[in-house]
Figure 1 (cartoon, one colour):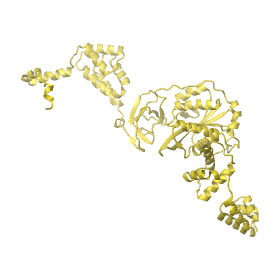
Figure 2: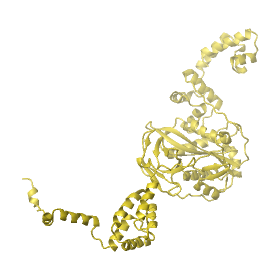
Figure 3: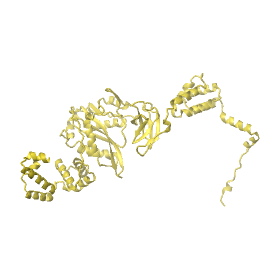
Figure 4: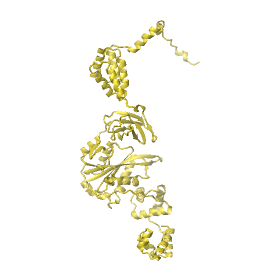
Length: 521
C-alpha cells in the first residue's frame, strides 16, 4: 500500500468511526478485513506519516529478487504469484525460504507500485468425494502454444495423469498430436513413474481410446482394447459435457498450462519433458494442494503401497493403421488437420462415427488411410496456411457404379470362360486406384485374340497370382507368340496401302557426320 492509499484509508476509517460504526460494520462497508480496520482505528496523522517513512526505508525480504520479479511481471502481466515463485526457485536452482503469503504480498505490492494489474479467470467444479488409495487415476489431454528461441509459436501436446487420492501427477509432452500407440506408451511411462497401476482409470470420450458408446456399452479402439485386456484395469468413461466427473484431471491440465507452460520458452521436446519432470518434483507434486491442504508427494508415499505392481513393460507393435492419427470424417466428406480441410472420396462418410487415419510419416505429404483395410484412400500435399480447403476433384463424385459397368463390359468379352470375371475382380482389389487403366489395357490386349490363348494366359496368371494387366498382356504375347503388337502391325499395313511407292524410304539410313566437323576453328 502506497502513501496515498494509507492516508485515504485512515481518513475513511476515522470518518466512519465518528459516525458511530463499529469495527465489523466498517470492515463490511469498506470491504476490508477487521485487522486492517484495527490498524487505522486509533492512529493519528503523525502515525501515518511515520508509517509512510518506514515503508520507504524498510528493506523487504524479496528486494534482492526485485529486478528479476519486476521484469517477469512487466513482460508477462498475467503471471500468478505461485508461478513467479516457481520460476524464481527454478532460476536460482534452489528453494527460496520465504513463505507463500509473504511472496503473494510482495508480488501484489510490486503490481500496485508499478501499476501492473492482473486479470483472474475462475472455473468452478462440483466437489467429488475422494476414492480410496490406489483405487483410481484420471487421464486427459491438453495442448499449448509456446514461443521457441526465435519467437516463433510452436503448438505442443501433452497427456496428464493424476492419482485421485494423493493428487500425485504425471505429465508427458509431444511435438505432434498423440496417436493411440503414443497413449499406450504414455500409460506405461506413467505406471513406471508411479511404481504401479491403479485399479481404475477415468477417461474422456476421446477418439484415440473410444470408438463409440452405446447406452453404456463401450466400443474401444482395437489397439487400446487389446492393451486394456493385457494390463487388466477398469475403465470409467465420462459422459459427454460432464467435466465434473473428472474435475481433478481438468484442474491438473489447467495447472500445467498456467503454472508450468505459460510464457515458457520452447527449446526442444526432450528439454521440455526434462523441465516438466523437474517442475512436478518441485511444484506440481511438491507444493501444498489447494483442496487437500497436503503435499501430494508426501501422501503418495502411502498411496504407492496400494498400487498394483507392474513387472514387465508392454511395448506396442506399430502397424500401418495404428501408427497414424485417427480423425473424424465430416458430413461433407472432408477431414480437418492442423487448421485446414482435406477432401476424401465421396461416400467415405457413413455416419457420425466415421473416421479415418492420417499418416504424416512422409515429409509434406498427408496420407489418408482406411481404418478397416489400411488402404490409401487419399493423398494431399500438407498446406502451411490456415483455413484452406485442399480438394482432389476426383473425390467429387461416386464412381463405383461406373467401375462396375467397366468390369461387366470386360467380363462380357468371354462370358463362358471360367475364372475370367474372378480374375478381373482380383485386379480391382489389387489395384483399386488404377482399375480403369487396367481394364482398358486388358480390353486392348484381348481384342481379336483366340479364346484358347486367353484361357492359357488366364490360367498362368491365376496360378502364379499375377493380378496385373501388364503381366496378363505379357502372358498373352508369350502364348500367342506375338512379337509385334497387333495395333502397330495394323498401322504399318495401312501406311503401305496408302503410298506403296514410298516404301523404299524405310530402308534408307541417314548419314552420320564425323566428330571432326563439330570442332571449332
